[in-house]
Image (tube, rainbow, N blue to C red):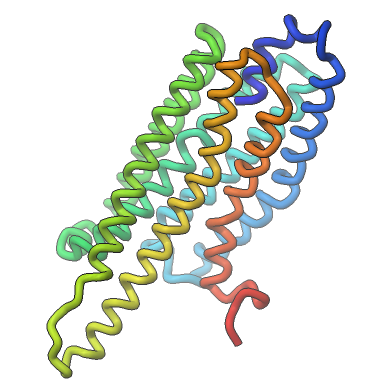
Length: 282
């Protein structure tokens, strides 16, 4: 979004604020470079763990597998954004791939939350659609939607203004955040509900509560990741539109949150898999 605004307003601001623009570009390049350096290896390692069966299996973690693949595709977008600073003809390609981060990442996060919501609140429905083929269908639709979003990002950049691009981003954020918050509240409510008090069901109820707690923690983490990642950049978009000025203080914190948000899910997975010794209990 920052590069979109910069690309649209470069001609008008080059004469008055060249030093500020170059300073912003340098900070963006450093942030994108850090993501390129650590992002693909981290996500690739998690994908390898899922495929090799180190976790709960490919079928039960299929949505997470697709999420990490989408994150790798989005890291490629950072490479094109860096190159577009020096080769302006690559900017449309960078904006085309932007849909992987704008739509793909929150969409697969929503699929993970909905899956956990069904497992806790509607277990019968969850068991009915538990086979892998249903997950493959959902992910196929998600990938088609993501590719369509990539095309829309490019069309908006070529034919419309930054304001239209901002509204497109904002509506998606509100939609995905609402879905995840609904799943979070529903699982929390199910977790607080107490079952029958028979002693012979005590062990069964403890296992059920443990499963609900794990689902709640996963949904909480994905929802918090969505808010932390997209809320600052949404404010930056709004401030840029209101002030009509692509200011560095608007974007630096937003880009940092946007990059760090991509590492929350893989680090959480590595923690659960026991691959991060400093975060795991003895």
